[in-house]
Amino acid sequence: MTERVPQTTDDAGIPAPSDQFSQSVGPNGPLLLQDHYLIQKMAHFNRERVPERVVHAKGGGAYGVLEITEDVSQYTKADLFQKGKRTDLLLRFSTVAGELGSADTARDPRGFALKFYTEQGNYDIVGNNTPIFFIRDPSKFSDFIHSQKRRADNQLRDHNMQWDFWTLQPESAHQVSFLMTDRGTPKSWRHMHGFGSHTFLWYNAAGEKFWVKYHFKTEQGVENFTAAEAKALEAQDPDLHRRDLWNAIKNGDHPSWTVNVQIMPFEDAADYRFNPFDLTKVWPHADYPEITIGRFTLNRNPENYFAEIEQAGFEPSNLVPGIGMSPDKMLQGRLFSYPDAHRYRIGPNYLQLPVNRPKSPVHSYNRDGAMAYVNGGDPVYAPNTVGGPAADPDLYKGSGYHVAGEIVRSAYQLHKEDDDFSQPRALWEKVLSHTDRANMVSNIVGHASAPEVTDDMKKRVVEYWTNIHPDLGGGVAKGLGVQS
Ligand code: NDP
Ligand code: HEM
Image 1: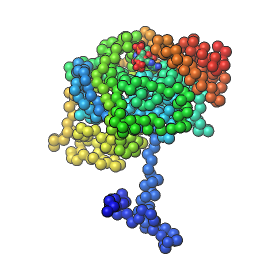
Image 2: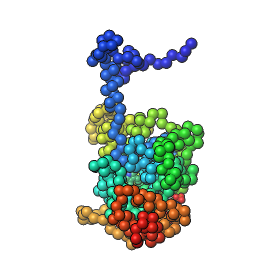
Image 3: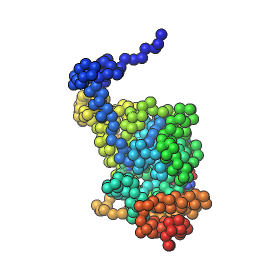
Image 4: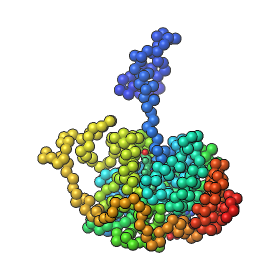
């Protein structure tokens, strides 16, 4: 006997009249408006897409678990970071500039967005595979992204406009340096590090405060493609990274990352040699070494990409007790931007979708709105005398700090060694191998040789790299045929 399959229904659960035929007036006649089943099918199809993410549109992700192996209770009381604790998580990887169908191996930073389903609500670390970023003020973000996406007239990507923005914003030099090494074309999502990038606040049960940076070090080892390999793969398999992660997990080869932190005593920030909140800078390891606190593993693929990955909403504003914000201006801007994006892209009740819903109880006084599903009952207001949920401000004791000043529009106040070039110079001089440097030069030359890049722009490109190191500028000048 053949096994019975379930009966098709419409979305109201009503048995479907046919999987094959619309209702018509006679076999050859016109169709009928009363065919609700056909109309629901066509109308729903027209609404299948939500807008793609305005950045980081192409990606993939998986579930896993974080395990804390060291005692860091002297730094943070956050429940998920207590020794021995295991916390479920979702990690979404992405490219930044490409659209939903774009190729995974494009030269781009990679998103590294983590959502921890803690017992105190969701904690999201929405980072990249680099510890730094292109700009240090959120007011430039949309301009920056526009320059990396498409022109208004012909809807083409345009390297001239990319270099125009970068060379006018020397603060981009550190991040563009990373991008132009072979780390700009990782071999897979499994073979790259992740970073929280920003500086965050940690505070312990006694209310003592520390600044912290997260480093997630791949246990698969860092592996990259050369520019030529990455280019060839754009045509051969645009979904290479999505496929690689899916297959690895399906085959039981679970990728893992060591979780390291750099900890800065709260008081050090004021006169540290670099501005510790400037997102274009790292904290050199000699000043603040990395401390291992645990590791996480990805062990489960999503069952439904749209429901669990496309509709996932990560937000740097999801912080739990024991973790706070820093005055990093980029972080401050992002605290607003992400929940705002989700309300538009997914809907006001995006936090009720299974992938975004915390695993801890929700007792919020927010109510109703489109697609409200898990809607609280009475009382609908606070404070109240009828036993409704009440906040416990003590949970956040220690998270505050003093700030004062004139209201201004200004660059960050410089610290002793702040400038835009010394850290990328350290990367070039101290960290990159001979081969890394040669590849970096040829990657820059390849990028700035696009036909739309003007001669004048090429001179500015050479100047930009010469600021970092004369050998780097010289190599780029030679490759671009610019007299330096
Ligand atoms: P260190 O020598 O202590 O650290 C160098 C860092 O660079 C290591 O984290 C290393 O880790 C990483 N690295 C190695 N090869 C590359 C590469 N090809 N591209 C990017 N990163 C690489 O020196 P400092 O801490 O003083 O930093 C010197 C420079 O190194 C910085 O100016 C910055 O450009 C870069 N860097 C620094 C980081 C930090 O947090 N301090 C983090 C990453 C880079 P790994 O090989 O595991 O990636
Ligand atoms: C995605 C804004 C800087 C990492 C997004 C999205 C927006 C956005 C609107 C789309 C969200 C969505 O629709 O789901 C901004 C703004 C920034 C900024 C305004 C600066 C002011 C950064 C930085 C990083 C970063 C510095 C990394 C350190 C990411 C990642 C995603 C993302 C990883 C994808 C998240 C996912 O997988 O869903 N950003 N961004 N962004 N951003 Fe940013």
